[in-house]
Image (cartoon, rainbow, N blue to C red; front, side, top):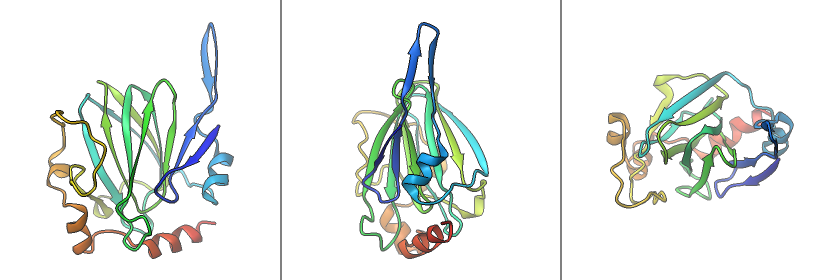
Length: 198
């Protein structure tokens, strides 16, 4: 398994080795020792989610209050998406920086997002399916969003696409509005919480 840190500190891409023959293929899509080696602590598994989306569906940018936040290990076993990682941690040296990874059923990569980092994706094919391993369960009162079409975020979204978005994501504030309202996690709170996991 190859591991690469993304432009957002603490976020990583994992590319598995695929072993194929005339029967099909086999791969290890999650290895806890590789994750621990990259992030410096184990990840508690509290919930596993599946998301199935039509082509053109744009979800996010989602994040949770820290502590405890919600770390995610995300893969795409069917279809293809552009997965976006967004640094929404106020005070981070890379605040506002975004990175994108294509997750698909060909390369079978996964992305790890630490607590306090925003997540969004654009489905490129019908029935694109994301599998999430989550460090904490869903907690509506601690879950927040930023509009993924905020021009200042500059997500690498294709032109000429009528995105399918939820009402909640459409009405979400911009990054600047979320920062001004005190909605965003802080770099210091995220670092302190993550340090407590080691």
